[in-house]
Length: 260
Image (cartoon, rainbow, N blue to C red; front, side):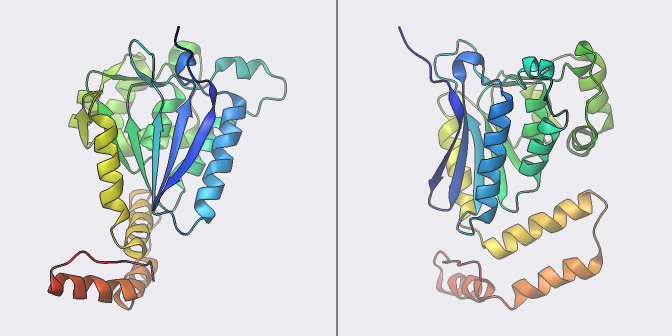
């Protein structure tokens, strides 16, 4: 009989890429309170690591009959008298605030708070025939503010209302139509597609990549100012990476960016 791995989220580094894997496939990768603290620790470590340019968030779905990327938070945690009601929100916000580009390789269906975790990523690819469901109102829960804002920002108001006010599952194909997913893949192909995307993004100029991510997020959140955007632009214009990019283009070779 196959024994399924049951552990806290795993952090690995492969070149410029840091990979976080949710690792409780036998429990549908449901997140415990301890898992959320581990995720925050991983994210703080990644944020400090200047060698990391891309973060991949994925899960272990080995042995599952119907792949589940994550079934959200283990609601038993709400019964703990020491439960922090903001813990899940803080964890997802940590993910959203990482300076590196974050890619979600969503290799199964997503439920509850894990939907917000997926939306907090910058780029997303998904599994064909999987689904996305937010059951907060079915459980009597009003969702936390930053999660509601993220839903509306990524999916739009009408789709967010459909997700929350019906608690119905939304197929990934619908999310792809809304622009939330870049592409959908078979179970056999999704890991390779995620690796290929991460590799491609990790070889873009990191100074421009992270600066542009920050600027786009500020614009999307209505918090941008022209001065800060122009300062990032000016920094890139005088960077060694921009000089290398121009030289590589003229020499018809791949650039070797250093982030300087």
